[in-house]
Length: 221
Image (cartoon, rainbow, N blue to C red):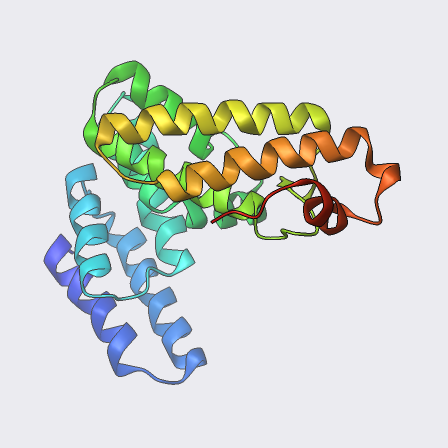
């Protein structure tokens, strides 16, 4: 089974089947056929499949990731293939889900980025993927404002606020390198991280962080 046949079969399953159980069964059969014929897809084949499905807004289902995308690309990551690294980074949410049910934590977005930059430090696409991931995380840390600043899954500590301030400064340098204007997000991050750090040192004087902001800080324009 070649790449074109496999891809067309996958697309047909996605767009011509509306009952979930039927779709899942046909996808399982397709992947079983792939295993039986042991199609030797290259990393280039897999990257082209990813790009095509993404461009056509066709869902990349987790079984496809598990049985084809991750095995092929992760093997190439071991061979220091930067394009394979970028392929996994583009599907970072699939990677998180994959790790959740396989407990395979060999790679994370952070380790993939580090490996990629060690190989090709000025690769623009890698830098853009890093920018997207950083921007999404910075936005996440602010999504509970004015309740507080989030760090991972909890409220940030004073030390973690300092870490976030440093992360923002690095993000600002990255944006300048990529000639991106993310000044609004950067200013919000600097403002709220500093404010929350100060609040944590004197929080007993206020009802909550919102109260601190109202009494001590000027509102962002």
